[in-house]
Every structure is written in C-alpha cells, then in structure tokens.
Length: 122
Image (cartoon, rainbow, N blue to C red; front, side, top):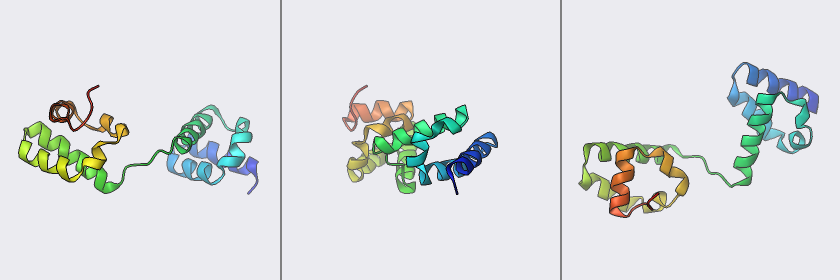
C-alpha cells in the first residue's frame, strides 16, 4: 500500500472515530508518516503526534493486572481498608514507583498513599 492510500485510510478511520484502526495504520507506517504527515487531516496529525511522543518517551501501556491493582488500591482507599492497602503496597512496590500512574489513583488513594510514604507528595 502506498503512502497516499495509507493516509486516506487513516483519515477515513479518524473521521469515523475508529481510532484503533487509525492507530494500527499509524504504528505500522510511523517512519513514512513522519515525513509525509502533511497528507493527514488535522485530527489524524494530532493522533500521529501523540503516538510518536509515546514511542519516543518509552511509554509503557498499563497491563490488565496493573489496572486491576490500581482499581483495588482505589477501592481499599475509599473504604479506608488500611490492612488490605498495606498488603497491596508491599506486594506491588515496584508498580507504585512509576510516576505515570499517579493520575489513575483517586483522591482518597493519593492522600493515603502519600501518608504511608508509598508515593511522593505532589
């Protein structure tokens, strides 16, 4: 598939809000699209920029089990179940070191985790 056809497919996918397909096309052709991005419409260029930034910053998407741990931490913090929270923090201390996870915690979890010293204060 040539670059113009790829750009057309990406533009159509973005227009139809099929971002999964658009992302797939972008990731498969990211090197070509960086030099030929002018063929993309505005929204597709923004998506290209976001995906390029993610690849350049070594962004690691959350795994299913990591998301489950975060949800459980949020639930324990909301219920103020410190026993369960301490156990989760102890077992998953490496996960809490990631700074990119802080936005996934609710306010209760942030306050309790900061108080425990599990995450740095913001």
